[in-house]
Image 1 (spheres, one colour):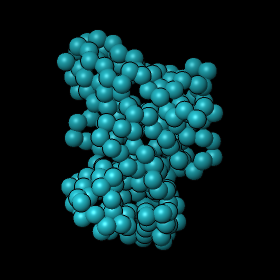
Image 2 (spheres, rainbow over the protein chains, first blue to last red):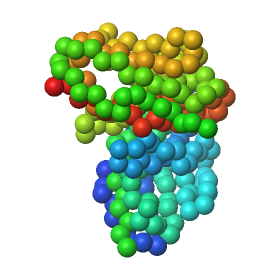
Image 3 (tube, rainbow over the protein chains, first blue to last red):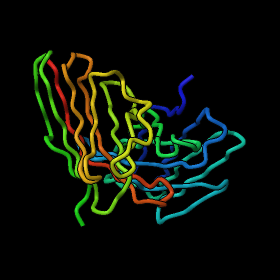
Length: 114
Length: 114
């Protein structure tokens, strides 16, 4: 079992729809969770961080965390063609010397079509 | 404010040669990380510096890889001798002390070993 799993997609949604991206993780003691967006050939760009169970909203983005189910998701409302990118789920190290280590999923390719 | 800068953006070398990658973190960031993405795989952690000290080098694949951060500013990652399986994209990231593991990534160095 991979430590962080995402559906690789591609996920295709029409412009204006809600895109839902999902991620599961295996380490129960993980405390920090991140979503990065990466355009082809560019750097991964942090778009959301979440540390507590529940929802966290920032503009059109909502991150949801359920530690009991070891599940984190990202919702993108009113999807735009400019949202087309690879979305990477990352889980922070549990602590000790590994606190800085991010473990990534393979990424989900999102395509928003006009 | 300048972001994380990596040099070169692309390097093509032959098997057995040596390559040195450089990363300049965001000014003032004590934490510096190296990651690698080989084709078809997820981004994987290599190591973490706090200032000039190695906090976690659990992801370094073998002793052909040497990372340094003299003076706690920029970092270099040397691969000597390079093997075919070292091909991939090497990312550097940095974060501020106490910033809840919020890491900012560079655009990466694409290494091709022929």
